[in-house]
Image (tube, rainbow, N blue to C red):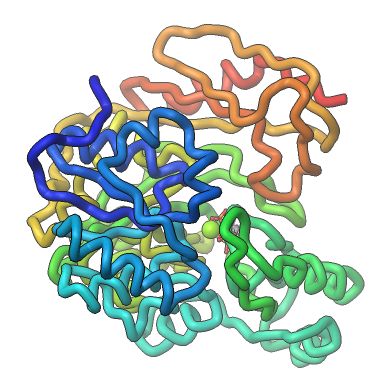
Length: 417
Ligand SMILES: Nc1ncnc2c1ncn2[C@@H]1O[C@H](COP(=O)(O)OP(=O)(O)OP(=O)(O)O)[C@@H](O)[C@H]1O
Ligand SMILES: [Mg+2]
């Protein structure tokens, strides 16, 4: 397939397409015959890979950390280029996309609620207001306040400490008892600005009740306020203090009825944070012996982790196409056209250091990608930044795809010195 700016179709302005979902959005725009524009920082644009630069019909260079200026610049850009839709491809800018859509009269999310899709304190309030099942929570501005909250026993042990605004499991800790609470709060509060734009973050730490059980994600495309559920995906993580994703599998293995409950709960979460024209990525856990999913978080954006590729490989549904259709005010195409399975497994290090060597054996039905190269620094395995690469496998069943990806990972070599 040739990736490029569609010559005639309407345009969509993407607020920061540099993340994992950007490439799937570019592919989807090509398939729909749309022109894609980007709003970003000049120096971030300078670092775009060639395929992304050449896919763009135009760039609005602005300062996305300065909301009034970014809105003025993007409004002027919209007057010149007349895009028919606007979408954020970067979680922290989803409120900006909602504000811009309202200002220029394009389909978009509710700007009054949009910050709740980025800030987990506001998200907790939005879920409570809408009756969405979610962990109990409290805020802590410092370790002493966290100790006081924990001592009330209202959240129990273990509990989860996380930054109000962050992603990629950065600064998220599952804490077993009071002895390690202060260090977890400090870890959650160490992010004052987000890379690469320098956006200032809310450094409030959030304390949450720990929800036991298996974890799933489910995306919801919303068009004119109507939720269209997408396939449920099983998410696997490490099990210690740091919950690092080890892989995702589609289909999820849930029975049809429970998968529908997950889809309904994810849709309620998306609507609760004001998603009206766009997509939301929701993570949920189901406590053992129950059939009630609890929403861990939702984001008003396409999923990362190559989940667009995984879901399309298993079901034929392109989440990126559905998302673009929704932001254009069209009815999204969410009908599965395949009933296969796909699994992704991440190549993770045992410890941090410098990446010395990698090798992944070829296997039919699989392909691998590296996120780091030999010579790169590998962070300690505390969040998703330590990922060295991934293996994606397709098979007839979820079990087959999971086994195939896991067997390739088991035969791969990752040397960190
Ligand atoms: N309240 C909770 N109960 C149980 N597990 C939790 C809870 N909160 C977070 N986790 C675990 O930690 C992971 C990361 O937390 P969360 O999704 O809130 O952070 P994030 O930085 O937005 O993550 P990511 O971008 O990696 O999805 C979750 O996917 C889940 O496995
Ligand atoms: Mg998450």
